[in-house]
Length: 571
Image (cartoon, rainbow, N blue to C red; front, side, top):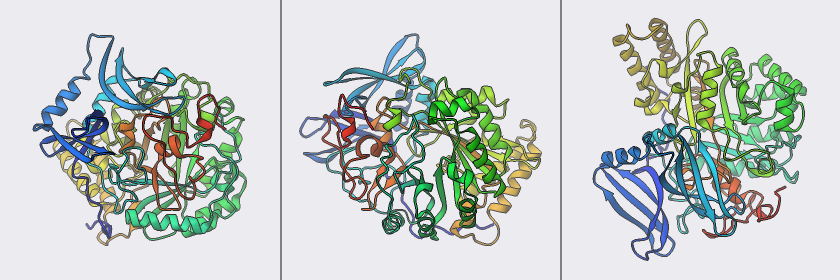
């Protein structure tokens, strides 16, 4: 069997594994600076980029295994009601200044404690399970370098976003905001839709050119907004993205126009567009709380159109404490029951943007990734368990939990973790809604198939699993080579996925996570800005759309968005 054709220009892995972040004195000038802790072979090093002294490094240990074990040991359960785990850099929830923060465990939960010199102390819950939080560090893997970067590191993270030479991960998912017009005004909206611009197709084409230059090939390119179906030239923009280097085009939409515009839906189908549908639940009250009005009938109509036309679909479920977490089982059931629905992305509510910063939610008692996993296990009738999920090494392991499920011949789906040691196969832990036909996937599937032969007595339904694995290998890796589009799409009806992705907001922002972000907003000037950096420091700056913007100096309020100055409402 032959694998798909290789990327014409291969991305190289980083020369180290980015493990954690801390503040430490610069060894030259002595000023306290942000530093990365990285694993380099058997060694552990601290890397700085001091604005005055330039790049510097210092060896911390010659035994990386012992260093990691000691780090993880600090997070083991203890008899203390509270203990300090580590330090990091966070943001003041009021003025967005970067501030030192303590990562503290209290009664099995993880909190950020921080004090802003201007606004005072604050805190936030970042994980409902300290054990999961600590274990995630063991999934750290080397990131991949982009083929090209826009900026050299000079002032330090997040001052140099663009991407800069110190960023730890390439662009896995570029999200292009093609408009700030929207037909909703959601109480939880992460952006500030000012109804002022539509991205010109020519500017969009420049963005695609810069993405191809930086990445070579892209698995997916997402179109967002605003509401992208409000763009008057949507189909022209889609056509300009129809390039051999782009595996699939994904439209992120609330579905309102699709529910009533069959002509548009057919045009999307003809162009092979995938739809990522915002679907937050199955009650009128849910939509009233999260989206500002009852949208249940429109969501049902959009689902019907997508099913009728068999448009490949991902569901986006924003999960909020006390609002819709009781409907997670139902959305999992919908995923498993419809062949055209390929993936589910659950996003714990992020208190960010025009709506999110004013939404009535307690940052000290919120839904986080472990809470979603528990709810899914309790509500799915055994179809998914919390231990079916793994922290995703790309981006930072605290950002995403993921499970893949293999389709058996009778139509059931079985999580890969039930019959394979997924953590052994780095290629399976991908930031991808489906498993593409890549060499590392083929190798992993072959090794799992061989392993099943030796474990026939201990794995239920092992014969059906082996048959499904053989079918997957046959379909995804035929004798003939596959082109990029075929390789990306070959296995999408054989494997489904569930992601739990917790985007950061001013309460739970952690600079450690930002350094390895792989969801990026491409700008017309060629800059690629990590999503959580853009949402915090760049959005709605006067030059953000055309030239990109830069946040202010570390240690003072970031006010590139005037709506975020202390004492003012965003909007």
